[in-house]
Image (cartoon, rainbow, N blue to C red; front, side):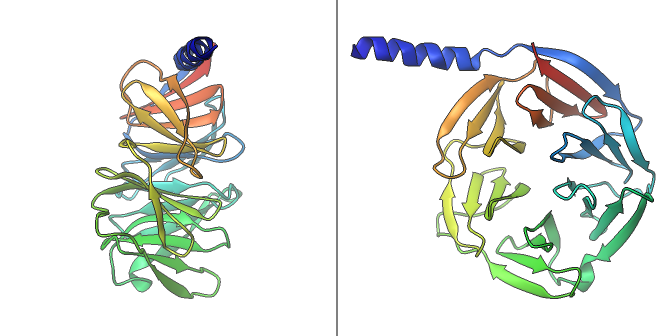
Length: 266
């Protein structure tokens, strides 16, 4: 009986790895893509090295083109609020809310908020903005309406050192940091270190179906942020890419330099 269960476990594992991706659409742009994001409608946000922004639907059709090219690359986009996506340009130390109805932006100069260089940012759960500063020791919570800023020290342990953070996400009051050397590190909403996911080194991260998704070698790894369980591994599309987005469990977008590719499960 135990041998049968072992065989079944191995079979399920092998089946989970078998994924047949079919290229649905590939788009090429004049400028290299510097950042990407998605909203809960499956729309795709692309930021470019020249500062421009494009929004596509799930099929790759253009919905909006914002041409505020300023030779300062878009570092990150947060489309949690699809009516007010947040665009961060690290070199300029600016934030911009994009108004999709009139294609205009509302800017925030981060030098007026923090003496520290802001490295990453994310929209918070209470209409605030979470800023990760360059000393990598604190989060600043900024409320654009009131102008109030609250500093939250990141309390970790002596063995944990964030040196090169790549991405920051918020999920159910869990702060998720992807660091180049440490992998995925989790903090609670008060800045307390909770855990580090083992073997989680990756260049990019996504959140899909309440799971953290990492790209490692040629597979996507789905990990629970609550108990750090690896729930499944599936084969990634062929070819090299820097970033990825799961629009749903059957559609994944990959980004490589100036190309975007949309793959669907066969």
